[in-house]
Image (cartoon, rainbow, N blue to C red; front, side):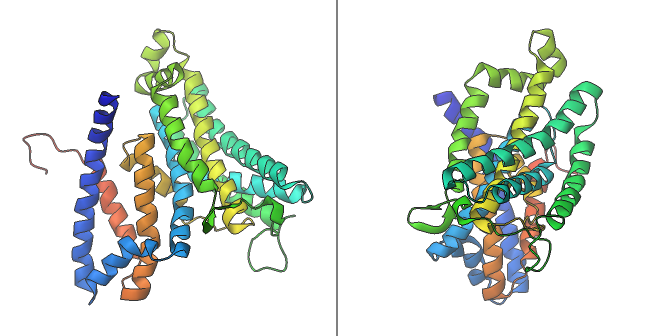
Length: 342
């Protein structure tokens, strides 16, 4: 247990240092463009806690980032660079919507359960495709997952326009789901759904599965060296496919949680890039499932805080995108000991 805590603390040291450095640089940028830099940074970091409604928005923003980040952890641990979280998210959302609309008179718990299963299955299927192509045909997963994102976006647009579109509403949106399909709120926190609680519970379960089971050890062995893993008896190709099923399923669950708990309908442009941000969340956490909780919370904090900062201090919210870019740069940079950076 002590070794695990030491490993976790070491894995978090780099990300924490990168966050501190980036936020310090960000403050200098805010100082250059705003007459009220302290107010701007106060809004960026603390406005999420000003009211229960603000905090509920923060919780809802954190949920998809956490789920997609956990999914990326599984795929990365298996040696697969899954950049298809966005497509898997959209497929999960459209599948959950279609299921809820198909059974509008079903009892609430049954309807919610069926919709969540449909979302998970759709996301998992979208993750299975690049996984099976990688192990069977050696197709590069970066290309397939990236291309499948575009296919998923176009497919969901077609489906929402043909058959599910609410003609009384503007844009490519589905009919509103029956109220019994809506996820209940967290007690005492109206506006934040229990999807956030489920996502938080999945993080320690992911840690146990990856680091305290034989299956997790085999998956990580496949990710470290697939040929060696197969040579010692691990069914490495199978582990890769399973990891992609889990990764896609978690992204699909994030999409289902959105339509059932927040939007209550499918919206063609509901994601501000959750797939890419979720991947960044996982990388920032050094692909550790517990670290993903902290990094997802940090990203949700600054993404929501950027809006409050723009309103109160007239600092463009695009500054957060710049900070996120610097954060990725700091996290991916590796300097050799005793050698100055070029």
